[in-house]
Image 1 (tube, rainbow, N blue to C red):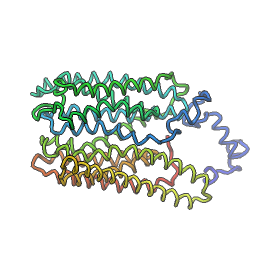
Image 2 (tube, rainbow, N blue to C red):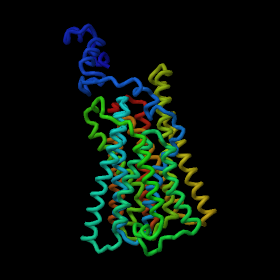
Image 3 (cartoon, rainbow, N blue to C red):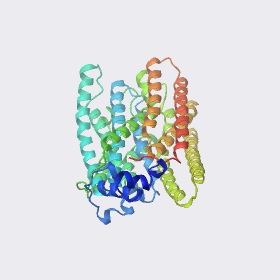
Image 4 (cartoon, helix red, strand yellow):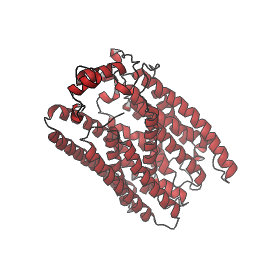
Length: 462
């Protein structure tokens, strides 16, 4: 790169006194450490047993990655169950807590990956455990203050101690589940989810104590054993997270400069994705029209959130194939063609998986529960477009293009929020779904084109 800009061996010898370009670069990196000018010279080589590929989640097999979609599926089910809730204050608190916890999980995992990039797995485990503890404490404080403020400022009588427990439980589950997945224990998360899934199936299929139409989501668990199933899942997930991070210790080396700011950027990315995915719930909340989109329609979001596990598998496959192309291709033009073709193939596979899951879920709903609402198809199509945009965003994030991704997604969120603020309960649901589809299609086009161009370009990953 230096020689391509005219800085050749003669210029180096004349201006810097080194024998040549390679001697000049070697001297500067020897002075700055293995991270070059991005990190101080204080670097301690990690122990060999901690630097192996097997110790890094990114280096293990992705056989169980499809289970990672469950991390998103369970909170989504809770969020869309809130739509017919009787009290909009309670629903707003739970949705707000869900979004903040979701965003915090993105920032937490980014910093943990930074330690893993240093081959310092115990430091990553220590940070994950501290994040769960700090996040839980912060959730308790925020939940208590939010419930107190809602009781003082509004006329609601639905929020209570159970609301606080649900708010805290959401945070504990999301952060703990992210920790379990970061440590490569997908099957343990599946085991932790069994109580909640089993309880939901029992009360849905076998006619358990159903929630009365006039009752609130948070108030009902106080009068039935439903809360025990949810609490069992939360407790199991937290225990698995603490067991998986038992070997944590202080970091051997500090993270590179700018890691905190980058973590905040990834938290913002998680927040914007959450706002777009949960737009139907937020729109119903803002317009005080809880019955217009029933749960049988909003369940169309489940294929999208479950498909995030498929997206992670494809993303790891993309990284492996790019490394192989770098070793096998003999020309820049050849690498450009293969990398772009690979991106298009992976995108097509992701879209196919998402569409198949959407159609399959609709078929099961129609066959078993008689779901014939056409709005399911419209919302499923909108979520397919949004999933395409999210997959392109994941590719761009892995290439260090998160600022562009944030700009596109933030613009989409702004449009959706303006629509919800301008609309009211008289606006048909189809119009809101069409607005979501237009925003998702625009984001998919913009991010898709950017990813198509970026997959064959050199990128700064810091």
